[in-house]
Length: 367
Image 1 (tube, rainbow, N blue to C red):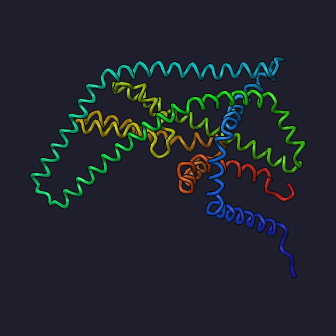
Image 2: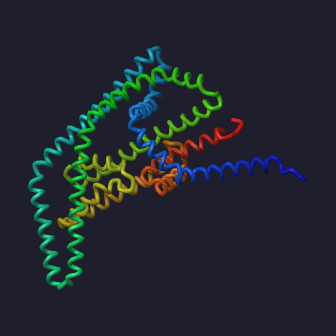
Image 3: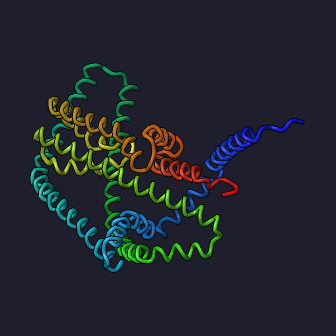
């Protein structure tokens, strides 16, 4: 019996590996993922400070290494200095933003009573107009019941949303002490991980088989690079959305332009909704209030912000996590379809790790 060429056998084995991996992923998603995800949800709060510390170390370690290689200063002093500058800068920016927000919020609070009166008056006018229309049209009782039920459902939803927001704020305030504790633990973990990184890696190397350690080193490096790149990409996209919104609102002469721009930047984190969380209710209110010109201007600005973000997202995400824009676009879509909002974060990172691990030979039996 004639033997198959060695090249064809290797190609067949590669295809077989790919098929087995895909089957394994499908089985994992439908059978193991729910249980694993439940464990992750329970475990993340326990290791949150250390995850945050690892991310911060990944962001600051290149700076520490660069300074250490160029000077004779102790690594401990360099780490403390970099941490002081990094968090001092963040605290300074936060204080500046808070001061600007306080100024605009004070201005807004002074105008809120008049604004609330306008809102109530507008809602009453709309209600009276609708009642007049329904009366003149002689709408059948059954349809009136449907309309009244719809209005009642809408009001209930608005009330529940308001209660949810209030509870969310209360929970946030209650979480602040724990958040402060997590931040302190994270800072200490950042210092010790960055200072003793070589010793930590050496301990893993001494206690793990060489092949397993090499695999973990490659996968860990790629995963860390992808996570840090993803965070960097999201920050860039947030800044782009906030900057475009601020420039556009300043051009339109809109009030509270800085406050709204910051809200747009924060809302940009939300997948699918994004800046629309801020712009859409504002546009609808302008239409209801009869200010169609300003509503159209806001709609144009919202369109510009959304289009620019969507066009730049695959490119920025791909450049920062090491994917081609097409790969980034496909991974974002697949992640959204498979895991929903969370998939927009997980799938691109998993794809980067898998791609790098495959190229590095992690899955080879003789690695």
